Image 1: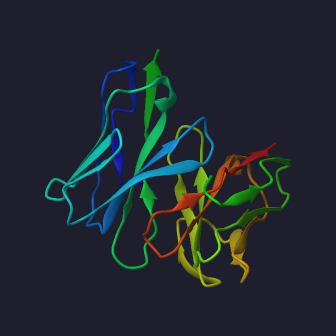
Image 2: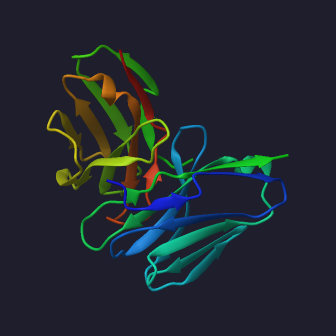
Image 3: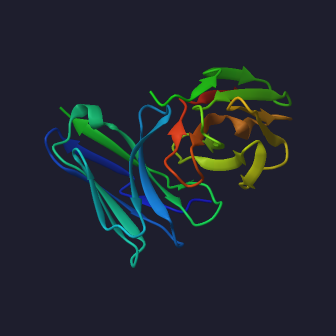
Length: 111
Length: 112
């Protein structure tokens, strides 16, 4: 079963604009991670935010986490055509449970 | 480059056959997980191995089985293939459970 639900399902923007994707989840987590997938191939890890963190930055990426609302957002600033991909959030709960993925947001950046 | 290699990249099998997919993880990564990703969906957890023992299992039938070897390689075996088994199968390794996962490029399995 899916734990995270990304919103929107699809997003189309112009190059240079910012893209924001949201993720909601249902149960308590240890950390939340964002991944990118190009053309149905392997997933690439983007950023991990722990449950005691509220915001994290990595280059053009900014991730926020609100554990009270069980939600996270991924912001990609100054988007490029190369950012076109599917983006997934994945949650890691406490203990031995594995990463649980949402259905993803398909981002299209138009040059 | 994640350091995780999967083989083969593509595979076509007939319904009822058996298939073995392989994964070579990063050295030192004791945890390996396998995921099934249907078209347009997120990855679904199949099972996880930690130090060569199954450590967790998703909602998949027993005909999905696996092995993890001391040399950080692992296998996913699927018996009695069904058409719905057609998907991208992803292997991911981690240094610890719940940590950042490093994914291979996947094996695209088509069952006809």
